[in-house]
Length: 507
Image (cartoon, rainbow, N blue to C red; front, side, top):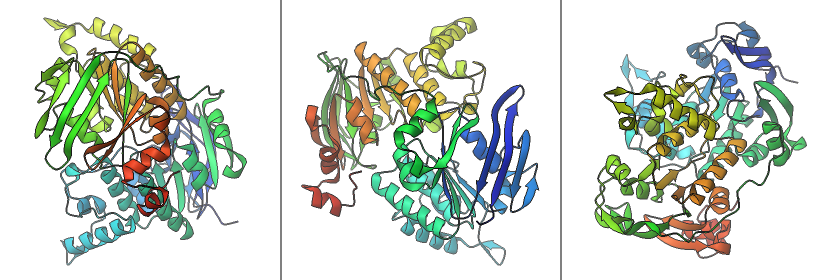
């Protein structure tokens, strides 16, 4: 058996008296693909940060290439061949694609930056990822999926021995995921070890050789993926039996809360028409880049429509900003929670009351009222944190998403638009979100859900609209809401053979 590249022996991490990780033993060998599973807050991110040098272990030993390290830092970790693709993007928005790809490892010629070579190499890497993304495009102009590909490209131009992938597929289409997995398998064939973190258990089962499952900071399972099915993985992650994934659909019979008529946006949207009823969960499905998010952003006034109307409760509304939308009882949960939803350096209370702050001001801010409201949401949404004073940036992805939702609920909206509401959330927390969304609908709220996960669209939504090239191309109800029909419409295909030719997998 080959010697491990990295060896963890009884590794643990504590923050003051709070022990978040303990007793981790793991050998990472060349060519291995290891799945790391656990609920949000189980210790996955802490483990990755120990390996990549962001954190130093509180106890135990970390060995890389046969040498012990007690104070590993990110620069040394990268020099030793450890590369990480984070769940939340670590890109400079004002720089171009190629500048981000080579950030910190710039190519120079006679002391000057060799921009032509960096652009050429970036284009080659993007071609390997089957992407036509322009190396000179500014990061701020990219979609979330395109930013994810830039993060992948950063690793591929590096001479990595260990690659850490933290939720790399949450915003990618099936086709993009297939390409990424081909790249991972090529890395594995070249002797690179891969740590793969995902809440999509089928992906872990398909890609990984073995799995390490964490719960409450400790290892509860370490075995071959051949020995575990997806149900067993989920059960070991949460430590309990999982009930039905999706709550029972209730249908809807309420009045129309939101109506969109012939909405157009330059070349991005064309004649979009639909109605959203009170008590309804309406799904928007389609491939990445189809225009789903653009529909939401145009309704919210984040983009200026070219033509068309938005009606709230039957009245035409001229919404030109999110503030206008909020005044009309509309709220939007963006797919980019860290970039557009939360202030990571603020604590939970400050984030939750950020949009509704006027309600808590009578001359001065009524901090006691703010705290009571935050405590209400902490209990109602099961937000796991040691203190309401904790900075939101220190919370797990699932708990950040709950804080973001609490922030929106505190403005008491009647209409909620949820864009990728369970991105980067573990299976147990997803169940909580699905039940919460259904409960909000049962209380009369009108809810529009945008999701790249077909299982989520099918299991949660009462009605599904399929978007392709900026148009609504299908309106599906009841038994029509199934994976094959949705993907046929999304890909613009007429039959299964045409769908396969379009390069879209029915998985």
